[in-house]
Length: 579
Image: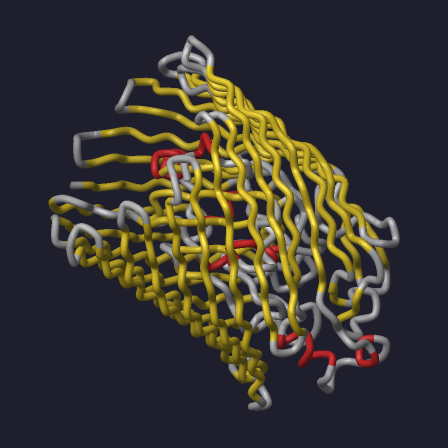
């Protein structure tokens, strides 16, 4: 759908934006965007939560070339964002707010990631980087295409010695991280209307980590294999996509070289998406999904659950100015029965004679999330005790809306202001005060606030980008929801020292008024902080580029999770070759 017609709040990053910022991990790229907060527990590859508008990371759906990047073995089914590297990515779209109608009833936000594609000819590239903490990264891609089809292959190998993740670790040993990622996308154009596409992704990582109790000689292995095969028909009136997809995740933890935890999980999906252009101003989008989720616990027990879903959305417009969508989704879950979700969006566009545009927009959506198999299994297992062991978990329900205004000038300057208000009823959470297991809040957990963003070319050489988010987020008891800053802000500039050859980018990220909950202590304040990152790129030839960046340039010492270190000032440099 053209951005002009979208009533949802959307942020978009293209390949140039991603390269200019220079970050190795997708989480660091995303935290520069409005309403996105990230909590990291001790460096690259360590447990990381990404929240959109204060909602937990497992309520965010991440798609990579249409493949759902979710871990069924996690406590909640959601993306392991710490294992997602930025190499090979050409575009990221972030849809903020409830998106459950089309993407799944528990989707509190959607991050849609696209890798490169070569439609004609041959193209490729290679990147090598080194820097502090013994960090090395090598990545490359190769793509080819013609009227018959296309292929795109990307490979990434990231290694770092890291630093001691836990502040209380007396040994101060290094907690390193290795990540190997392979991504293959192949498309075959059967004719002008039919296309067959396959995507395969393989992520293998090893992370060393500290424990708050027992041995600090601990290691976590994570292996994720995903694929999706789709057949697409695009006609003048109708379009159809039929797809089959699978995610297979194997996780195993070791203490002093001995396996201490192991689990395996699968998600199998069969998807259909269709659309019909009923007239020049009216379209219908419809689809159905069958999903089977299965996990095998450390004890060898197998848990499985099926869910069937169907959805329908009407899209309409009037005079290319006023746009509406109205959708409904119905889910039938094996364990928690049937649920119906809704979504409405609208946008009204005013075009001016100078080429600028003013858009008023609004959206409203509902959803639900069934307790994960892991949450249920934990409360029924040997490690849970009262009150969690006596709690029968039920589904969460969600509801949210936003209203906003967006102004885009003829030179593509963009200003946006959005108010959002969303709530979770009967939110599931882990008992951090008593460690008894998973509990369910009785009442409404709420996040409401304001997002403001600016992206403006000040001159032909200077571009300014900034965003600010105010988020008032509370649980049913009126306490602040943990690890959610009330104030988040980014201020950045990109300056072309020599146009099309030498540029420098700087980003300042600030966080204020976040809290955490500690076992046996209760609520504690997290640090306020400002982090400055600087990167520069120099085009040596048409095919070769050198770059460098400094992360946390002022060596800010702060905590995103109580008791865990963050990286200090770190410099990195590399070379990028393209043909």
